[in-house]
Image 1 (tube, one colour):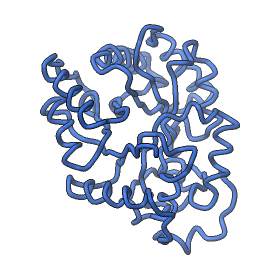
Image 2 (tube, helix red, strand yellow):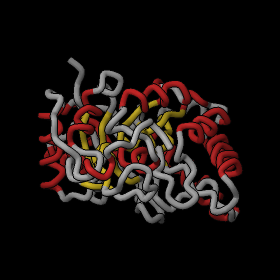
Image 3 (cartoon, helix red, strand yellow):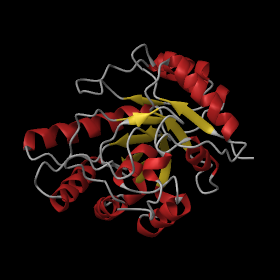
Length: 299
C-alpha cells in the first residue's frame, strides 16, 4: 500500500526542527513552509545543527518530500527590471539554501505579466529559470497552477507547458496542482477529475506532477478569484477532494493543505483526509446547486 503523504503549511520562524515537530503534532508526514517572509525580505540564516536535527526527525517519522514555497512578492515576469532581478536573486538564493535539505521540492507562483501579455510573461519566467537552474542542484522547482486572477500566468495547463518547454534544464522542473486554483480557473475537478487529469497528461504530462495543494474553494468554478476554503466547506466539496486523494494517478504525491486554519483545524483536516483515503465519500459541496450542469474540464 502506498504511503499517504499529507501535511500543511507550518512556520519555520523557530527553526527547522521546530517546524518538523509541529508537522508531527498535526499528524502530518510532510509539510510546506515559506523560505522567507511570504511578503518578501531576507531569509534567516540556516543553522547547521538545526537542519541536521530536522533531517533526522524527518527520516525517523518517514516524511515524504517537503515543499518549500517562494515568497508571494516574487514576480519573475514583472514589467520592471528591478522586480525581475529581485525574483532571479531570490530564486537563486532559495535554491542554494535548499541544498541543505536535498531531494525536496520548491514551489513558486509563475507571476503576473501586468499588461505585457501572457506570451511575454512566459518568455520572462522561462528566462529567469534558465538563469538560476543548475545541473548539480538537488531540488525540483515546481510551477504552481494558478486561478487566473488579474494577469496571472499559469492559469491554464497550456501556459505552464509553454514555460516548461522553454526551460533548458527541464529535468529540474515539475508542477504543483492547487485544487482551488484549477477549480477557480475553470477545470472541473469535482465533476470530471479523470478528464482534467487526462488533459493535464496530454498537455504537460502527469510525470511532471510532483505535489498537490489540497484546498476547497469559496468560489464557483471559473470565478478566477483564488479564495481558499476549509475542506468540505466550499464549492469543490469533500466528496470531490476525497476522489483527489484516492485517485490512482495521484496517490503517491505529497498533499499539502493551505486552508484557512489554525493548528487544531489542520489536525482535524489531516485526520479527516486520512479517513477519506480509505473511502470514496459521498458528501456534497457547499455550492452544489450553483455549479450543477457545468460540464467540461476547462473554460
